Length: 443
Image (tube, rainbow, N blue to C red):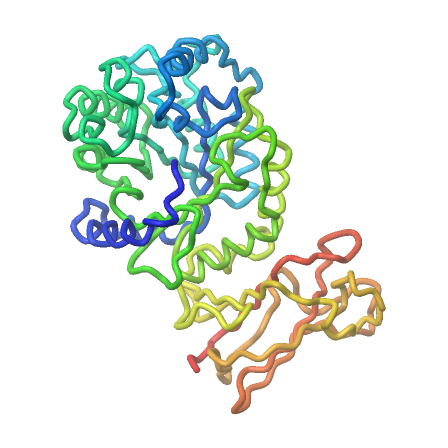
């Protein structure tokens, strides 16, 4: 991966045009749009050094490049690798699909291959990590995706071609050996690992995506066929399904020091905005070289999972409402039910009505949030619910009514909802809440 925040708009337009003539089946794209949340895993042998994945080879001197290709495989030993644990964490977090870096730009294959010795099978840990991962995630009911880079710096090094991306001699379309290597490797991945649901081609996709659709007609090619903005979200919903991928910190691969992780609350808000605009969020983790996930990453996955455990129906199998948001209220629309979800972010609970009389500005417990929506109108059949809570009981306050209230007038739909679900011990759950509004009318 490489950040594409500046030219992402042009790439999205190209992908949108390509999707009109792609081999992605419409019913499979519809299925993909239902998923909501995917887990991206960037992992390769240079995780041992804690540096950017693959890209340090571009412009490096001959000594650095030679040591990268010859020395790093000798020490890569992920002896704590437990893909079943990764998969359990992912399932608990509400992840619907996984995308694994089978081969990044360096050319190092995290799978068994006949095409090169530069692979996991020629390390002190000669196990097919890719097969183990796919099997583990399938056991948890998580759909399988392959990240594959058509750029292969190891092949360029063997050819004596300067390592780079985007130059004519580094383009697989102009480099027969590179193209054949890619075709052979992709054929291995798509014929020896069972059904593959998704393919993310991070580079020149021509020839490769056609092979994928030929070998596995049900596969959905994401990058290379649909819009996949990176480290950014579009300003408005895009035409058709799309997917945005983000790092959890600042780097795709594991960064042992000088890392700055996004908060769990930020990740939840990113997911909400992505779904309100009709896309999927592909959230990245970078395992440590020993095969474990860093505690900072596991903790954020857990916080996201807790929020989704409560609010999942506002995220899965939804589509955009006729507006994406009103201020800090984001909307999704249920696909199979006459309902809209209003997801309230950046809540100032200290200013909310202290119905329970706690006199503690840090407590969300028993506070009523009052808001008015102008893009949604209530009908005669409308009901309102705070997802995850029945609206009948507030713990330790038997005489306090926590039920949602609402009324409609010319100014809008007026809502009054209570934070009544005990999520944290100190009643200080600060993450977004989701309101379900049934039988809504567009305003």
